[in-house]
Amino acid sequence: MEQFQIVVGNRLRDISHAIQTHAVSHGYGAARDFLAHRIRPSIHEEPNFPHYELPGRGLCLEEGITITIEPMITTGTWQVKMDSNGWTARTRDGSYCAQYEHSIAITKDGPVIMTLQTN
Image (cartoon, rainbow, N blue to C red; front, side, top):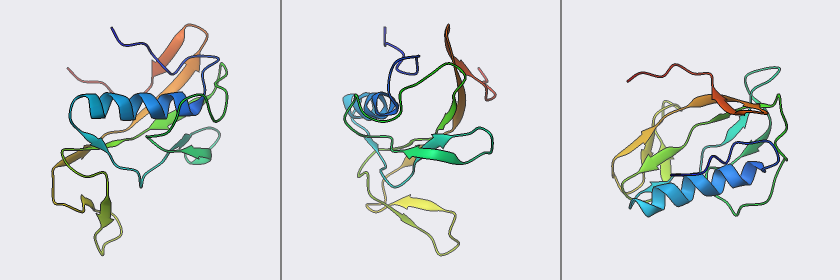
């Protein structure tokens, strides 16, 4: 069973490290050009943080903080390029990738995923 990293007392980069470690352990990469961030009081708040990094660094997670994580997981390189429309991202080597986003509240009882989940 995997341990949650989004808990009171951990740091933002613990989340980053867990995302990268999980992706790599399954033979995937995590794009480094996109950042996660806080989402309260507005949708894009500092600090921004990557989906890769060494653990034990960054903002200490406290009850009531809300963040978003939105890693792009790739079947090849972590390097990406943006299309001329400024919105579409692709891997530089043409490998497949997928990106998802979750908004998460940090509570004393653990993380609460606030985005829609489907089965």
